[in-house]
Image (cartoon, rainbow, N blue to C red; front, side, top):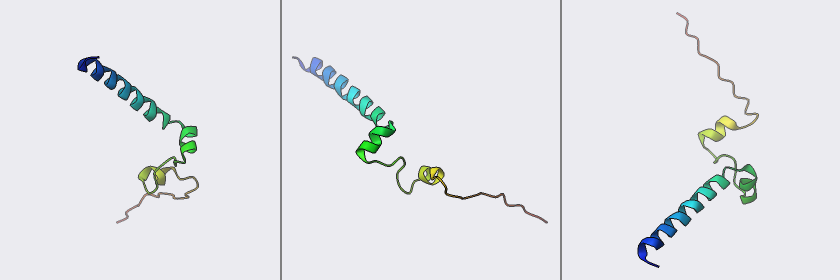
Length: 64
C-alpha cells in the first residue's frame, strides 16, 4: 500500500468515526448509558432548562 492510499483510508475512517460518535451523543439513551447529564452543570442551558425552577421574570416599569 502506498502512502497516498493509506492517507485516504485513514481520513475516511477517522471522519466516519467522528460523525458516528458525535451523532451518538445526541441520543438521550446513549447519554444516559454513559452517565452524562443532558446539560453541563452550571451552564446557561442548564439554568434555562431546569424543570420547576419557578423563576419568573417581570418587566421593570419606570415611572416618572
